[in-house]
Length: 210
Ligand SMILES: [Zn+2]
Image (cartoon, protein in one colour):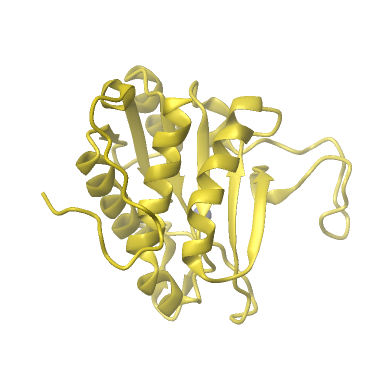
């Protein structure tokens, strides 16, 4: 198995004899082949997420973590799979979209109101954000379509119709949506994938060990 070394600024720690090799990490690819999420110049979120999830899986497995991957299908099916397998944590990697192709930055979403989810987000975000070499947009509560309560997020925003992100809300373990970059920043996405995935993996392990 290939060792995650690369030219990362992360220190590769030895992970022998830790409790991490009894934990189950569920990974999920964003969106669907036929509804692929954000896209830019023919490259879409689903395709990029597929490559990042397989990279993250390889790195986690090299540390001895048990990784399961959700089946292709609707969100309900993915979340049921995660819960049925008693996963300890769940991670789905997305890429942001913007009408302005110059917008760049890294953020990490967690379930609104979840104390453990917020802690998980803080640990993972701080382990990988520096590897992306772009603006740190921080950790954020994950609301469906980013429509937050008590805030007018767009003209005519009706208060009271906000919904938590389905993946974050209905997974019974702490769950995260890292958004490493905006989909238009394809050089940044490709150049930093390996070191950012090492950071995400180390953050997951750090959370599982605390
Ligand atoms: Zn998405």
